[in-house]
Length: 411
Image (spheres, rainbow, N blue to C red):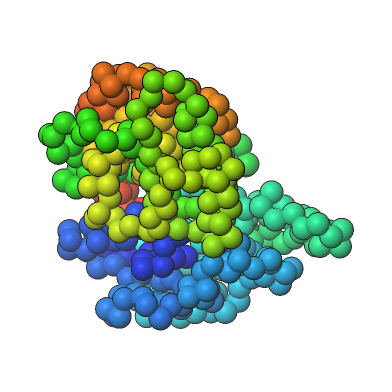
């Protein structure tokens, strides 16, 4: 097959796991003999390989302004980021006609507007839409749930866009078929009025050759090591992990504790996290490491005892808990969104309510006091991960579905 994948961000421009998963899927398809073109935003550091087309009207070199909250959006920004950008519309139509793909895969258009999706429809190419979160819902149904300005006149403009512009965009986009990353996200779209008959949930997979237990017992000397991996922003809950550590430090008879934080975010949020650590008296027990490449993560997981996944937002279905499970780690995560589809409480990990530092501290305390429980949960987590979340099986399923979508459209 010849595929064109449209995605807002593409490595090395990374905000979260979604763009990393896109690259892994693209490389897997290329490894199977398929031709894959990538259509994404503009960036000086994009691959110069003849197959990566930085044509969307989205400046990836300024991703902090758009994706990490560095700039307050104006009404014009809301229109061109979330709803419709005519420059991107024209560029995508032109590029698709040159590529002439068998199938267009619209992976994520958050901040890239609905224009690339509409351009694909208007150009007449078959397509499938991936939704790892609510970007399609925000762009076609309910912009007000994403953007709600403080000024009354701006609120009125948002409501007008939802009432009059978004129904037109929905009609032009004809958003189906859709592949969601979890049953949770599938239900979100059905509840919002999308056609459930054309929405399918396919959980992601992780490379089992990379993420696996190393067979070595975890170190018994030194501090008990907690791990946070993810974007540094409020919705992911790293501040809750730091607060929970502060509560744990007050418990008696615990070994020394240390929290390692891997990830990047806006400088202002990092400063806020450091302040939270100081306020909770744990600044000497928290280390901020910044971003780490995917191929280095397995060693990081194996070097820690407990993964903390304290997400507060409706987490669709994240790779980090699955990667940690595959490496045999004990995981404590929240019940937000689709995470419970990966973790069974008291069998493959522990689940707690979101935004509850005390509940997180109590769950982690159970594991801190009980190394046998940590070992049992990690061992079962690794078994389930190998059985259910293998990346090659995930690609097999995608390949089958892409062939079907391509053939159905040509009948």
